[in-house]
Every structure is written in structure tokens, then in C-alpha cells.
Length: 196
Image (cartoon, rainbow, N blue to C red; front, side):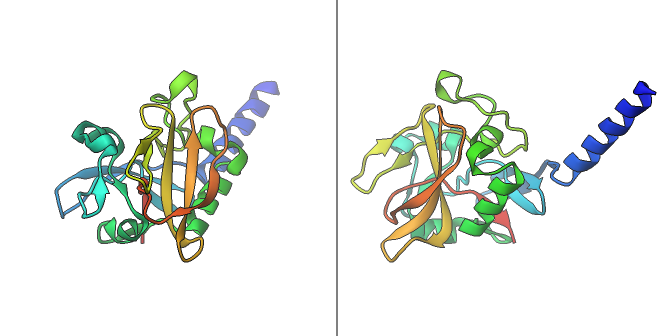
């Protein structure tokens, strides 16, 4: 009897997980030939790595090409809204919120979305959904760079906070949650594209 109960429970868990299961794939950006991993989480197909398209007003962290190769490029808000390839768009605030809710809510989403390695002090996530968020840091509006190399990452949303600020998401090595706020549109943050 216990054997059959375990089989039923395991099947139910698999069916429940299937609603949010990741479906890894790849996408080639025809503009520069770069290939990106993609992942389906709930009903949305996300790029499973940061955009690395060389657009005007985008930079590599500390202006080093190796950082672009690892973390993708950093974009100001206006550029971020135009940088995704055809068929994709910069994730809106609502799409970020839906992603967080799908993986259990913003309070624990950082653990679920962060990559399984690359974050300082064992601040790694489980990468349970294949989103693979890495700590790419950011560029501030004064020209400096902050938080890469294991500390934190910031990602633009396509949604305005107000006339001078755009909405963004933030993950940090020692935090379990995904933080949402507004920041100057001239700051340089990472970009995650979502399929149209």
C-alpha cells in the first residue's frame, strides 16, 4: 500500500512541477550571430542569460570584454528598451512580478533564480528553473561600476518608475529575495529579454 501511495505522490509532484517546468532551448540573434540559452517558465520564454548585444550606450562591466562574455552587457534604460532582438522584448515590471510569483514569490525568488555558482560567500541559488541569474553588477550614473564579481546584479524592466527613473530588479549574494525599485534611467543594468 505504501509503495502505491509513494508512486501517486511522486506522479502528482511531477504533474504539478510540469506546469512550471523549464524547457531549455537556444536562440540565435541574427544581428551579431550570438546564441543564447532560453528557458520556458510557466507560459513565458525567457533568455536564460543576459543580453550581450553591442548597442550604443551599452558597456561591459569595468569596460572589460571578459565581463561582457561572462555577464552580458550593461544598458541604460532607453537603450535597454530597444536592445532585444526581433521576436523578443525587454521584460516589463508585470512580467518580472509574474516570474517571481511562479517561483514562489519575491521573498524566495532570488534563491530560485540565481545561478548555482558564481555568487560570493555561498550566496548561490538553486537555479531551480534554469534562469541562471549571475551577479553582473551595474554602472551608476556617475560613470562608476558596482557589485560585479559575485556581489549582485540589477536588471531593467521596460516599465517606468517615473519621468526620471525606470523600474528594475535586484539580486544580492546574501539575500534570498528579489528586490524591486526605481533608479535613474542613465544607470547601466543588465537586460533579460522575453519572447513576444
